[in-house]
Amino acid sequence: MNNPVRKKICIVVRSLAGGGAERSAGLLSIMLSEIGHDVHVVSVLNDIKYPYAGDLLNLGIIKERNSKLVGGLKRFKALYKYIRQHNFDFLIDNRPRVNKLQEYVVAKFLYKPNRTIYCVRSFNLYNYMPTNALMARIWYGNAYRIVSVSETISKKLKNQYHLNNVITIHNPTDIASTTILSKPKIHGDYILYFGRLVDDVKNVSLLLEAFEKSHLYKAKVKLVIMGEGKDRTTLEKKVAMLNCKEYVEFIGYNPHPNSVIAHAKYAVLTSHYEGFPRILLESLSLGIPVVSVDCNSGPSEIIKNGENGLLVENYNTPALALAMDTLYFDNALYQKCKENAKRSVLKFNQDNIAKQWQKILN
Image 1 (cartoon, rainbow, N blue to C red):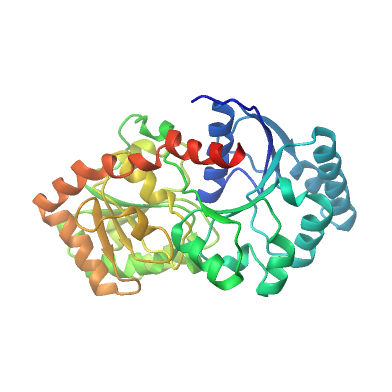
Image 2 (cartoon, helix red, strand yellow; image 1 turned 30 degrees about the horizontal axis):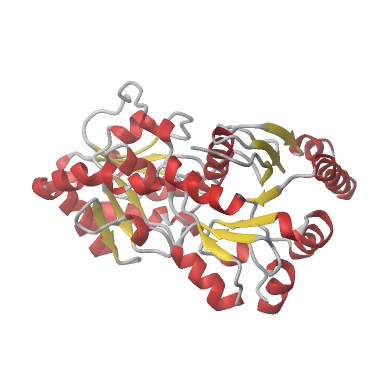
């Protein structure tokens, strides 16, 4: 891609590990670097697992030395010095912003509004914005841009906060995710959930309930759960109480998940809310159909029902169980969805998403 103007860009992240938002931030650094920008990444936590590009300032090392107030002041001073030293053309803030007093200080005294782009990566706006609309406009109304990852989030930001600097740039598919390694050591057919095991967000409990109501395990189809999180033990205890327990397998976090995804029959998403879910993007980009609840936000902007997967009313366990059965047992439907999978997410490839970022950076 032609890049007539090279920019110096700082991407601030909570970490580069743990979830789809963090992976997407890492991909953003790679995309911007590949089109010729000078990229720097600042991580608040010392948790670096996902690929990224550019120079890294790891504030997490300071936090680990001193997590108290003094350590916080040292991190603030280090970031302030780093931003002033490099005089970035743009700063892209990808962090959740939940400590409102802290975020006021960051917005007003650390960042330069006309050079700052705030990302909103979840339909749960209160992870990113103050509840008070006037306060939100005072803090973020004069920012260069607020970039949301779905049209639904953008609409909510505009309606709830009356902000006029909001645009939508979706999360990209990961080109590297199309590389498939050796077949995983999972015997027989399986369907797959992968992501954080945080039930008050991902609602894996709904998936377990629907799997037990389905006919899948009676046909010896497994449910494989790939990931880690604070609720893994609780979910394992729930599984132990199910009739289908022999067919549910937890395999933990996998830094190279491609082969597990690529050999699944399909992937399932049952979240309470999302941003623009990577589980759907990464599965479809590998040619794997999906079943998803129609949560806010993202699934309805990715899935064309009956074409690349099935979209189901959220919190409707019988409907979800039926959809899971249908996509497995209806071979004609399954083949249609599988054939359409990769093609359906081409518009979200890195080249297209990079062009959208390039447009606002230039």
